[in-house]
Length: 76
Ligand SMILES: [Zn+2]
Image 1: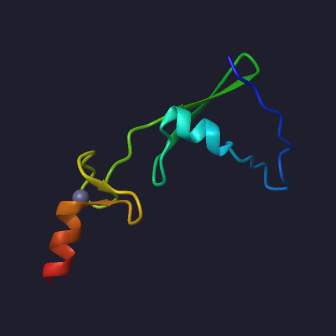
Image 2: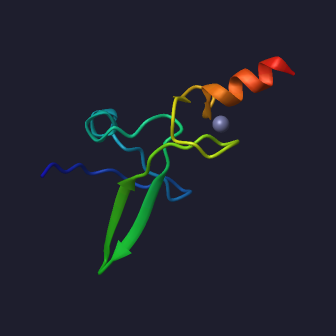
């Protein structure tokens, strides 16, 4: 188990260290589930989904949408 100590900012935010994001596979566009359990806060990685169609396949992590939706948008 690894640990780190961070202060919350005035909005209650913390930064998850880059090393932790890399080790857990949390990606840009990735969502996390935050659960409180007996005074502990648990952050779990969720699979990134396309913000348009909801698929988990071929997500472009810069645009947060899938390649198929990008192709549809380009065809408009
Ligand atoms: Zn899509």
